[in-house]
Image (cartoon, rainbow over all chains, first blue to last red; front, side, top):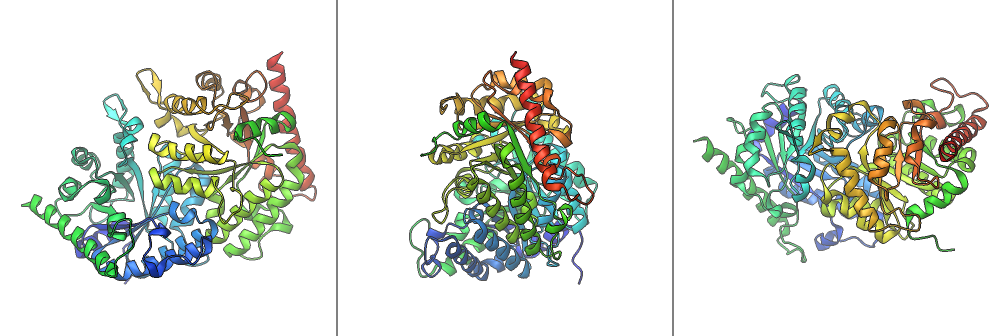
Length: 302
Length: 302
């Protein structure tokens, strides 16, 4: 079967069957389970540790998550071997049928944005694209967003652009209001316009938004403002948001959002050594998060 | 001699002796001179082409430029081999005593920003940092900037955060005004505060600003607003700015700014095949740009 060309239709099908959890992977090699601790402090050993650990996480969590979000920074810190691990982890997740978010938050202009988009959304060396969706920073305006949107349209991919991030200082710039509209709302509207023009079967187009789950009072307002943009919600779990906080991001069919958690799913044992039950703990953390959110969304619908 | 721990003091010494040109390298492999055209369309061949071409550019241009700015996107599009080429090019430029700007425009929060900062500003595998300065996107607020500032302080490095970019749509967000101050001015002030607290011999601290040379009418205002931030000025040459447009960014000693040009310095023959004189053309383009700007800055000072 040819996959639908709209990335968010593919995501919708996954969410309908497996729920709205997006497993975030921010690999911290010193916190890996014993069998995946790197053999040395060399970048190449760190990279091997990351790929092995991620594969084991996928074994455990794949039944309960629709998407994975790979945080490029924790790969890049290991330079070229780290970047190679990023590529390997993206491919491993796509081979398992998961929806892959390359969390790279790139932002530049013109042909530079095109080059970034090509890296994550296009075929390279005749291999399929690394990711279904790439995260994008909107500070440079349309010139920074549109090359990604064009690449997404061409390749059946998508973007999640930063609208309102989950961190406390997001208010410094994103909440500033001009003529009654915050910066974040302006970005959300610009993305929604591009999504409306490219909407698929479920009403969602290529340009999604990142809206932090740590701002539950705003989520519903963003949902109304941008009905054609799928939302990626970071901030769940370790950053404090719970199931009731994310409900307003979902549409009446329970679609339109995925909820990302990283530490609470991939290091559910906290900062100490991993217990021998860690694989089951990873699976259980993903299953519980999925069930909690499903129940909250279903409860709202009644 | 131990290099000064303030990155912008190092840069000032270079600018005083070699002028304010920053050679931007945005490698487009299909436009390389014949001897550096890749053997195939494979990423590994593209990476080899890039490293060889850059080395030849450095042979030609090093006498006339103080800094190089490597645009990560044009490396990342070739995935892991491309990233390895990025690392190799950064190291090659630092070995020649050039000031290296890793133009990655990263922006994230907390430990994620720390991981990015580590990649570009810290030792990895006991090798020196890849870059003197890394470019940063400020959309996430202080949470996104301060981890880079801390890493810069610790490693004798610096940042250039995006303030007002050279592209037309920069106005959509960066020019919006709240309480009499534009978003770009607010970012410039936040950076200047961090630079004031870390100012070196020449008055410049760790947090520099990117201010497009395509906005000459604003440059002087930003210079007054942020006297402790070194400026990186993109937009010269191919994007339209000339020597008179950048003068206002320099302080009375002719310091405080570097001017970046990419296509006009590294592909001075335009889009066609490179002429046999291309090495001399690259050297001449760099020398001419340096002399033009020096003359304009000296003319202003009289």
